[in-house]
Image 1: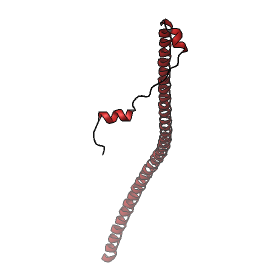
Image 2: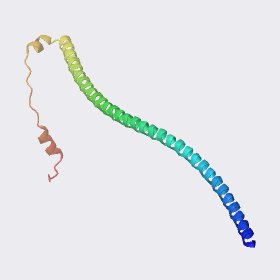
Image 3: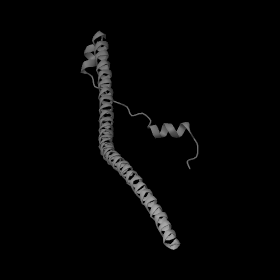
Image 4: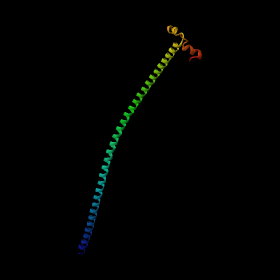
Length: 151
């Protein structure tokens, strides 16, 4: 029964190889499971990080949008304020010019009154009439000064 003994040896040999390969398969399966868990933890960690960053980005975008709207409002307010200030300054300048002209007229009137009051002919001057004599017009004066041909 050399064949039976040879068969038994071959059987034991294949059984041992089977057990080794089963042990190796279990070891690799366990290692694969550990790797899978490790990668799942990484995925969970990265997913949480991604979600947090996405939320932060959304908040930043919303804040940026609000700041831009606020900036536009302030720019409009500054433009309106500048326009109002310019109008006020122009009005003030016009009023100041008007007051200066009134002061000039008043000073002329007061000087004229003082001159009349100190004149020996003050009674004649007060009762008299004044007539303005028309002088040459500005157009005639300009034509005499520049005899250039008009285009």
